[in-house]
Amino acid sequence: MASKFRLALIQLYVEKFRPNNLARASRLIAQAASNGAAVVVLPEFFTCWCDPKYFIENKEQLDGPTNRMLSQAARDNRVFLFGGTFPEAIPDSEMLYNTCQIFNPRGDLVGMFRKLHLFDVDLGPRMKITESEMMVPGKSLTVVDTGFCRTGFGVCVDLRYPELARLYAKRGVDLMTYMGGFSLTTGPHHLQVLQRARAIDNQIYVANVGPASNHDAPYVTYGHSAVADPWGRIIGETGSDEDIVYADIDLDLIADTRRRLPVDHMRRDDLFETRDLTGEQT
Image (cartoon, rainbow, N blue to C red; front, side):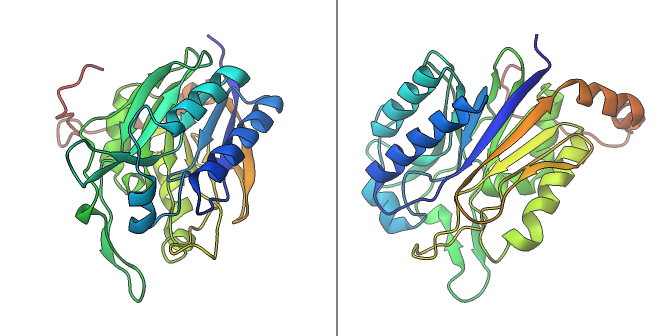
């Protein structure tokens, strides 16, 4: 199994209209692949603006236009494609899922993840958000084995829960991939701190990719997509504009970090534990 590969995070500038966003994402996926990426990741809500009005206008079924574009792009470019998220319509309901679909280089759907934690907060003027009014949380963890890397998934506020990352680490993931549209209020203070903490906690790689800042949108995202290595170092990052972040992942660094700093060996499992209550097979 290869121990090294190139990861690409596409910090997409998201417009109001889904067809424009799908076309733009497709072009950037091809660009990332041409620069050697084996795994390409899109951001949270890359198909439309992050706002209830646009979620309703752009909701779609699992086999909708987003699915078709992602499958085609993965197949055409021969990459593993972690397809950001889109508002998934729930049959016979006005509620939605925040859903990521994962494709292999043949364009086959090999995994799906629905955001677990809903963001219900009041952070001041124009920052009262109640996702639970229109979103339904997912109920399961998702691990995808690319053949060269086991990857776990989270979306946005899922990054704030160390127990979730710990469960994924216990399932043997090498890389946590979060797709998160952090705001201009929380992003500058929390995003990279949380990302580095999850990497250090579990001695794995942690990627986070959000949409680029668009100041015409109702909700302005922070951007600043990045990759942290198992030592907590940022090995690839960008600012607020549209960009592709590349990081060369060396899985041997995970074993080396754990050998030098054997946190799991020193862990007091007789005093506390993180238990997996999903009942899922690992």
